[in-house]
Length: 388
Image (tube, rainbow, N blue to C red; front, top):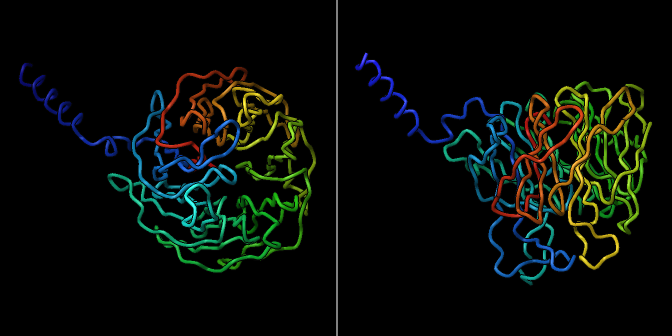
């Protein structure tokens, strides 16, 4: 018995010395893009002196509690919706866009960038294995369900970039012109059939329908109009509805989230609900029963501003058909950005640019409660999982 105990003790000791990355085979990966070029100074988005490089954090969402397990340097940006990250279905790689960079001519300003980084999540440690060019202001990015295509919304060009994927290698396959440079394509997301995609346009307030045939992507010329500045968008895994945020006019008025009925042809906006100021990230749960939305709630304003609040607000809405009903609410860190769900729908991660952190929250169907926080190396600006 003594020898047996010694044997297992030796095995346990050897196991514990393995690198963290090799023992998290059951992890659900969440990938956070962190912007170090943007800080708030009395409510003004400001480039700090000697800005550190942007980073990308890899988080094990299945761990109890969720924990940071890796980090790599790569261009990121808080400008644009927080779906500036896409994770492959098999969690083998992630894509991260960098919409803006420090202006080479003036270190106190930013300029549009077009970088799209491919990050190998299986490498130990994780590593950037390819950098390609999308279009100016590259923001929202998505990977098709079959893993063969990626689309990037180029907010400063009025286009969507198309990339084919072979393994973990991206190859440019053209662009789709949606409007002029001011049309502001912000995010683009595939529909479950793989033959269509939706692109939000916060410059001219449209949601465009794209058609997909292999690597050929075209603007169908069909579009919807929900509210002012459609921004983030998420599609139910059931394929029946989508939810999107409308950022509004930025004057402190209440803003709206909208619901798209995807069962009708053509799809159309069927419902809108008022929420707090500047809704940012929106994400469906894995079972399609809920949608989570983060509102900045004035937390990005100067403390002296009449519409200032110290915290962002995270709301979860239950989905019944095409109708939403409020299920739970919680305060989260200031200047809130993206939100993601665990596979079981019981844990959420909510980003805060102000805190350079990601809040961990529990959800039981009725109550939403903050249970912890994960510090990251930069302002938490974009986040996705393979479920999104």
